[in-house]
Amino acid sequence: MTFHSDLPIFILTNPERYWLQQVYDWNKIGRRFSFEHVRVALEGRIPNDFTYQEIDSRLLQHNGCSITILGIRALDPETDILNKIDLTACAIRQLILKDVDRHDLPITEISEITGYTTLHTSFYINLLSLVGHFNNGGSFEKDFQVFKTIRVGGSEKSFNNYMGYPGIEMLIMNSLRSYGPQPGAGFSHQEIFVANQKLDQIIELIGAKFEENNLEMLEIRNNINDMRNHFSLPKKNWWQMFLGKLGEMTVSGIISETLSKKIISIFSGVIHRLGF
Image (cartoon, rainbow, N blue to C red; front, side):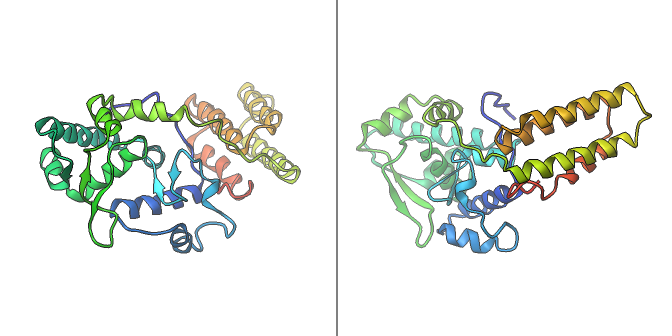
């Protein structure tokens, strides 16, 4: 697997993961649906007031109904989806070079080159279209968002994009420049109060594992107490910082993996909608 170190990493809350996974499952099979269908399918699994607008817009498009490549990577950091999209784009480029006068390309011909199914090929083309202009429409299977053909002729922009195709990772990085800083929900006064209580509980839990005035315990207490200085951060950033500190202490052996999991469980349900 190619490691894409330059692409951003996203930490998902449970409701965000459920929504993205449902959309991903339906996108892969070419199902046509609206955000209402997703919300109803997730009834009982996400908070009643959760909406897709709470998900980072870099992960989801088209009114909560199209997962992006970054959204797929957020669900599965080990995915090889980028390589598959690159192979699909290169296959289309090959067909254009073979006969530049053809305006419409059958998905079956693209699939013959890549070895992917027509269903998967259509999905990869849809993902590619989210980061640039790579087709001018096409024909679809009846009742499904699955291409039968794609139209690549008649557009200078589409033609140039295939001729100069730089790779999907570069296209994603270019598209990210159009996004400003993503807004994040901050802590309310009540959430700060409750979070402080949980931090006290964590210190008490860890203290039971160490002798009084133990140097490692002092280091842990300092790390935990430092989190009280960062409630001005968006909740997601705060949580990422907390997980980072916890991860460092676990890797260094100061606390065990079992204790680390207990610490994370203490925050379950504390921060509104985040699903920790």
